[in-house]
Length: 175
Image (cartoon, rainbow, N blue to C red; front, side):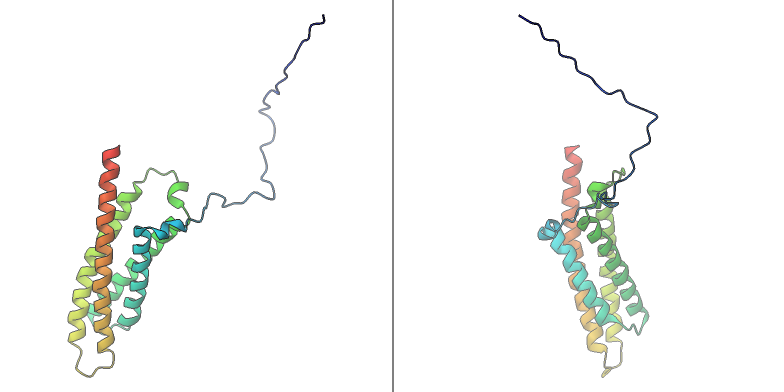
């Protein structure tokens, strides 16, 4: 009977070798994953509602005729941009891709809470300013309607803030 010998050969690492060069098929932004399922959830739908109501507020509230309307449009525009940034964060999966030590839920909670408070102040000022326009002014109805849409958007932001607060509290008790 013959004995058999098996030899396993491992390649030694070559530290002097040139680093791997990116291949032609490597994608520079391969970490981005489109996440459309988020917008089927309640927080995702609320963000879309905030954007749509913000567009109505901007369209109906402009041009601004008084200081209250200027503040209203400022709040609506800044809140719209902030919400749009959060939409892209969730749409592109940036939360999962970036490993910064950021409490994402708390950051979004603070942002949405500030937008809520500012919206409540802004729609009150918008309604006060729009009733001060002289009767028969052709944009008076649009200014009042912008204030009403501001009320609706403030309520949507308030509900989103509540949901984020509940989620943040739940994440703190898990740790």
